[in-house]
Length: 208
Image (cartoon, rainbow, N blue to C red; front, side):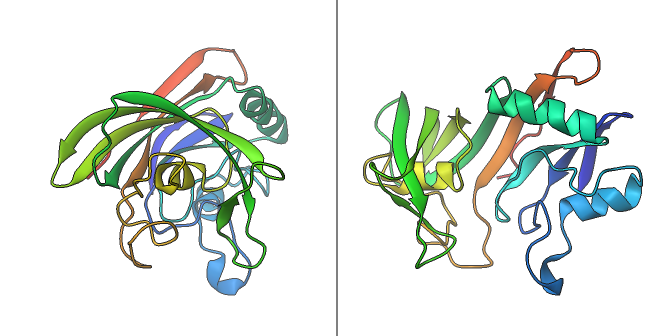
């Protein structure tokens, strides 16, 4: 865990891969980034997280230090005023330079927490992407999710109606194994400061 920025209203922190964003079910899943931050910032609300990253995903997250700030930031996410960018390395070659993926998906109730494509009952997910480099039978991508569905980037990369190239190390939708590193990192996060409206931009380079 690394704290990138903190004031009396927000905390922006880097979450390492393998650490939960928020507590899970059961005593063995209580260690998480929000719990660690609450031990440092004792005035944080019980649920300070405004958004989440998958346990296997690393990168930037913003946390609220008051309930009012939490409401403000949550509204910014709901109105899609927040900018988020990720970097990923996927299996295989992506021939196009840029594109946009629109796929609807939902929870696979018989195989939680996996998501499945369902154009009728699923919720739409939108991802813009840009190819950055090709090397060693892999492609490095810059990803911009315009919606925030569970496993959106992982499924959009892996599904044959998306890029058909799973993220390296993805043990749900690719050939990775549980416990290995998944090459997906939240590199950029930008939003309006909840107190003064200033446009804040944060960057965390991918370490892969």
